[in-house]
Amino acid sequence: MSASGKWADLRPRLISGLLLALVGVAAVRLGGVWFTGLATIAAGLMLWELATMEGAGLRAYGAFALGAAVMIAARFTGGGIEILLLVVAALGTAALARQSREVTLVYGLAVLLAADGLIDFRQDYGGTWLFWLIFVVIATDIGGYFAGRLIGGPKFWPRVSPKKTWAGTIAGWIGAALIGALFISFTTAGYDLIWISAAVAFASQMGDIAESAIKRRAGVKDSSQLIPGHGGLLDRFDGLLGAALMMLLVSFFVHVPVVRI
Image (tube, rainbow, N blue to C red):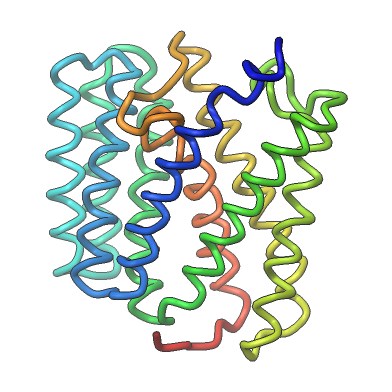
């Protein structure tokens, strides 16, 4: 591959990534209905992409409607009812699929749990820790992208994700740990945030690999063509899904300081 071909996707990737980052940062900063609305639309679109990859055809639009409706309804419930609604939406999405309904159910539920959990987390703990999460995922992605191309070397899991290298994987952990160290400097978080950031980076990479496995089995390159240079929302936010689920799990065991911004 020529040098120009090796970096051919960099320009559209950077432009669309910047626009996505601006929208995401604004929504996290504003919180409330803005972040809820963005998370709701994103969850619906990701369910649509998942159902499409699993052969739902035009019925995949039903997954978008179902996911968005349940996300909205979940704002007016809580506890077991909220979880039940998310499970119902995941089951409905799986019912629309024509291929692996089990995979659609599990991954669809992960999408909904992550989106719903992030809305609750933003409301309960403020926006600082969502910015931390976003920056950890970005650092993981950037570290992996450049280290993988500049250093190369052995593949991390070639059968599932042929492009991911050990160099890129480790660079992602280091970048995430540096983000953790940065946030320690202006929050009351302890030094545990460094290893937690690296663990979240690993979860982000596993989210990426999980989506890659779904695409390979479905025989598609991208989950959709919604985002130039990135493919679909699942292609862009697969890592964020894994990171979000890890962060929500960690928050059950580790005290999270409330920072209102």
